[in-house]
Image 1 (cartoon, rainbow, N blue to C red):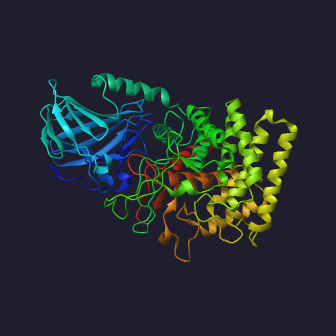
Image 2 (cartoon, rainbow, N blue to C red):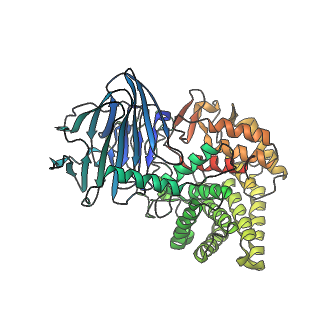
Length: 583
């Protein structure tokens, strides 16, 4: 099919805002261009794939020249695109109807002529199946609503009765006098659609759902951004409790290096990070969500726990490519090879999460059985090589083993039901793991090294002491912190590790997760002024919508990788809740 209008040109990642309802997410750019949405679920094929060079987009754009801005309504993922035009001010209030329905996505767009008359061009170009499913049965009913089919999907678009159908979608022009508003409602479902709902009702229910979903988070450092981090995480979290690592796939970490991944899945490690971060702020619902998802996976799969699952708890599909151009500098990919890996540290992280829940009296009988399962898995598998936190080649990674020791200590201390004998056994196993790791992963300088074969320093090795594998004052802890400061830091941003002899920034971007971990490490050493410096520097590594990607290009001040990256928002929240003036 030939489009009536071309696809929107891509923007820098920092300019995209997220709309999410727990079941799926959309990205909207500064020209009112929704260029990413998978439906019905997170890992479904995309309906709008223009972000990665595919077909499919939905734009609402002023016809007059404009300067773009925007903001989230507090404690929600209701985004307001705001354009100052040569004739006045116009906004488009945008959201996915919340709470999300597993089978039906509802895209709400309310155009408001804030100051002056306005005119906007609207183009709806759905392309389900990454463009493989053509629209058919495009019809307008007696109420001016458009309906269509594409593959197994049903579509309905309300609010554009005068739209002009083309061979690639629908287009219309919206004209508003000053003070007027106009609603557009797009529904996409894998089941026959229910009776239409009034836009006012959909907006009211969405506002109410967000109002009860996001806590106040008083007494956190940078409270507005801490609440926003929680909100983003809530938007990425489905009804089964799983939080997808990101809403997107195929956004490159580094241009033309082959490092493109599909992050529309739930990583157990990331889920544990998120739950622990929320626990630092209080016993909020996202803690229980994390515990519920991880508990279910442990009880189902035991020592064969996979590193990642779909949001519904199914296996991650094999990785494959699509015949699309990709986001500039990258290529398209769906699925993830993580489904073939063993990652030892997920058992330690699971124990840390369950211990955090126990400290808040949020660990039920199933959670307790899951903890026993994770501890037993560590006992039987802690000497096996694994892919590690960075999902590289199999090795006996120091981080994986030490985080398991931290998890054992945490669950022994936090769960009275363990009994003195079982708790003592876990402590003894933790001591043995730390001793074994010290025997083959202690660098001659006294710091931890990455593995018996890889002698370099790794920012992930700050985490075991933060989590309690060994004391803050242990010489190995302080030596590792000094080494990270000396070898992996640029301008108060932290890199994961050195890939080779090149300058750090030539190999990859700074890792924002590690920047917030550094803030926690400095706080643990009572260096609170320095901790806040790390926090504030890394907190600023986002665009106007306040979303973090995995990496930050320090030289160009640009985001790199999939968006938004859940674990970065999690560690930002934990740092905000831990550092003064936090709790």
